[in-house]
Amino acid sequence: MRLGLKAGINDQQIADRMQYQPTYFEFHLTAEDVTPTGLVRLREKIRYVRSQQVERIILHHPMSFEGHHIELSMNEASSPARYRFLWQSTLDLLQLAKAEDVQLLVHGSYDDPIEELTTGYGNITDAIRVLFKRLDYLQRIGGQNIMFENSISPIFYYGNPIFDQAIFDKGYRLAFDTSHCFIKLQGDQNAFLQSLATLREHVVHYHLVDSMGLKHDGLQLGTGKIDWARVLPLLNPDASSIYEVQLADQNDAREMIASHRYLTQLEQTLSE
Image (cartoon, rainbow, N blue to C red; front, side, top):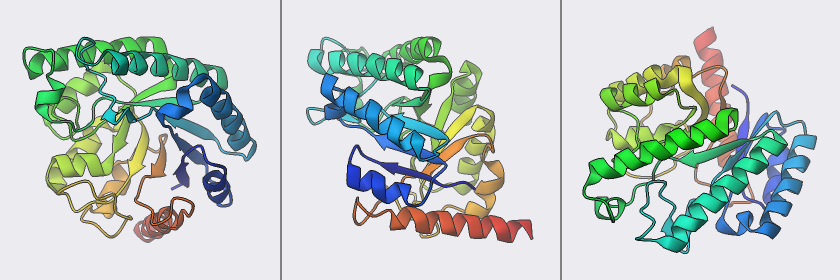
């Protein structure tokens, strides 16, 4: 296991992460980071992080705009300003990702209520159809610089064998959040492991997070119910990863480092 860490566009957070010499680094972006000024600053931070011998850099698309999740499937008529932000920010970040040879991570969906996901559509099937058309488009223009992450949303998640196979057959470059899948499956370990195995070939990035499998809890690895000894052999060895665990202090990565220590010790034990 190689170390992957995450931080916002914050000098103190970045300095804290760089002291551990991570192999992978993910920027957690906000709407402020994709303004013209924000993008200039982001480019500077990307170049700084790369100068610290970080091998792979990932840009996590902003999660929200004006207090609402950025749903890739959103209907333009229902949220015109948010819709404009979705596409402007995505295209701007994709252009930056290509120019700087980094990765853009986009959520296929979040966990908004079904009534919000279907606003402006006849039903959830229509929303899913629109979502996959947009994923197809982004994959086509993004190529090797874009990936799509799962959540616990009913329109883009991992853990259903039929849905997993459909996603796999699309050939998308995938980001796999372990806690999201485990929570969606309400802690069903075997179904979770099967999803990891099914999608493994197309996963290019992991969010390694523990969970009790009931709700978003973002636990440090080894403190939840995920069986990491069974997970490790199912991870794609060519993929990057970061520990997306809850921190007591955003300026101190100690819970991420403890998670990495846990996983590397487990890896050593399994190899003996």
